[in-house]
Image (cartoon, helix red, strand yellow):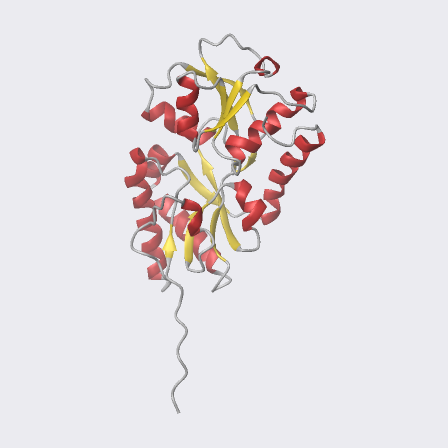
Length: 276
């Protein structure tokens, strides 16, 4: 009698796409190398390199997902229950406190606009309709000033925070909500390009972008991953703090991300369900 076929384990994959700007990609690789080495010491699967795909969201639902980072908005809207929460990062930049962050509403420095209300009828950019920092945070900040109706004259989708910044700087739009970490990266790596921009307002805070792993397999894998992340950050602290602004990853309860739903619901209650 033939032996039953063995089921193949899903191919291990990892990605860290959220702040993987080209200028810091080598340090992102170093972060993964440290985590992967510690996982292998614990006899856990870890791919040799990070997956960098055009569609970075495709990794999140793979059964072999070892580690990735996602935006909190898709986490609460579509990933909850399909992935396992590992922890929430702590970033050492203005606008980030413990494991929370905010967005900055950015305008041109020579634009005389001095209040959120004065943006009515102007042009805005969102990085995507599935973003907490570029879409939902902007909606939440504007909602008390919209009167429940259309607020902007035009809304464009840029595809990313860096593109939104360029759209503001080039006069294509007048305002965009920029993730606090991306704002810090932009000031460091393109200071001349974005010197003509300023912060007009700050959004409500939300839990920082969660690290996740697959819900398939060892139910305690997230504990080992959190330990590997924290040990790697401790061992290479100055490198990761200086390049990525990343200082720690904290254990958090899943309920912490209910804050993102609350932010969305509050905007809807004020009659501003989308950025328009």
